[in-house]
Image (cartoon, rainbow, N blue to C red; front, side, top):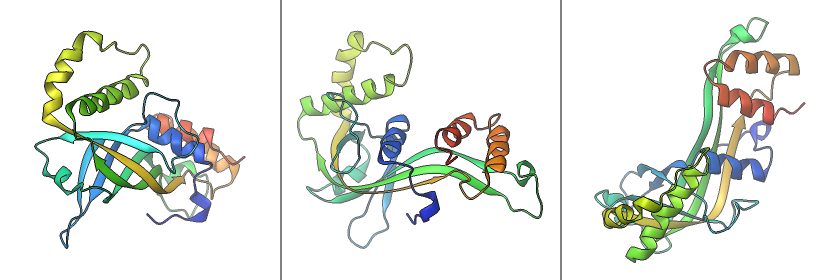
Amino acid sequence: MHVFDRYAAPSKSAEVDLVRRHPFAVVVSAEGTGAPVGSHVPVVFPQDRPPPGVLDGTTLPGHMARSNPQWRSFTAGREVLLVFSGPHGYVSPSAYGFEPAVPTLNYAAVHVTGSVDLVGDAAGCLRVVEETVRALEDLRDPAWDMTASREKFAALAGHVVAFRVRVTSVRSTFKLSQDMPPDVRARVRADLRGAHPHLAELMAAHDPG
């Protein structure tokens, strides 16, 4: 992903927070001379410790359906790309208050590259599935208690393949109208609150002032 300097992530913790809040990633891999393959899968932070301060060096667990042939390319140490997409939305010039003007899109995304390893045993696969549920339920209030369904999880675990990605590099873009003056950014946020409230919130949280 190409990153313009003015749209760089406001902090390493902002990258971590985006990945935590938007864990439904695209995992992209390539084998031989064929075109890259991508799958939409949940990829989360380990749940036995607090989220890290930075993504670099972190190991992220994920899983996909065993019937999906992509996992067969996950040979030990092969690199994959994880694409995490945050809030995004169309920005109309009607919010700018000046003309001539051109529309754009605001968005946030984090691209993570890392070496992938398969989780070979059934118990480890079940742990990843349960970690995933805990991570996603942590975003809800109240969170669902999975205790009564753990046997169901165990029965389904054989139908998925778990993997872990050790992060080696991170690139991110937080394009949030930083190139506009403060009064225009305020009008854009107000315009987005109806259709894209999470994007408006992200703009407010990372407004350069």
